[in-house]
Image (cartoon, rainbow, N blue to C red):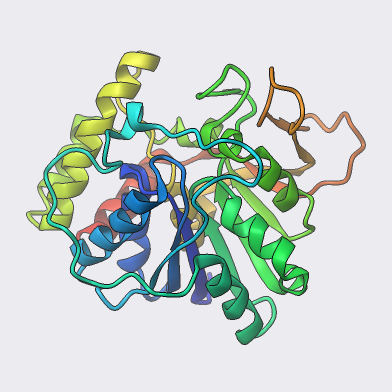
Length: 315
């Protein structure tokens, strides 16, 4: 399968699973060129997400990576965070040293706009792993960039799994449903990794020990992080492990054949408090609304963990 190296911007709110996704990208230079990482408020507030992003780059021994701070709150709603899942730092688990590498002075949204204007049209893919605030803000501030985006591959939403922060909504979409609505109506080709897929890539003892057995600092940290946030999900879902949500986005760029989905219409509920942030995914094609997203429904979990372990092992 011929395979072009993709230029990407990772938009993120790290988060242990965000950390694994970033490590996967930085370990895969033949597949993805990380033009920059933009932090957003989500799992934890912005001062922690931008700090965590830099910690992760240093762990990967890629301190030259450009890291930017973006929006510190959703477009219209108060920030909802997820310390109950990720711990108070967002990267709870082993204590990590403060990052030495700098935060870039430029605002993350300006970096997104400038990069999309500078690079050839349809050559930059956006990879949002958190709430869509930065992406929507860039689209609103510079409408000319929207048509230049090659693809947006995002982790967010749910259909069969429905919700994880409210009964009806997945966390990333719920935190900023107004931003999600802008992105889903933008006309940019979307690939969506919902909970339906991420709940199929569960950690277990064997998979976590494979990271630890790499004998490297990144391998050990991935094992420790997954050990940490696994506790919350195992208790909540009664599952054998925890879903690795965000690495699905990067794995899709590296091995798209591991994933299967349907090209369908997905609308975002942005007005009703009861179902705020719900991703209304027309999986059965009953609405006659035009398709706007490749909504992923299944993944080869063993293939996913094989790629993840091999790549993390390079760092």
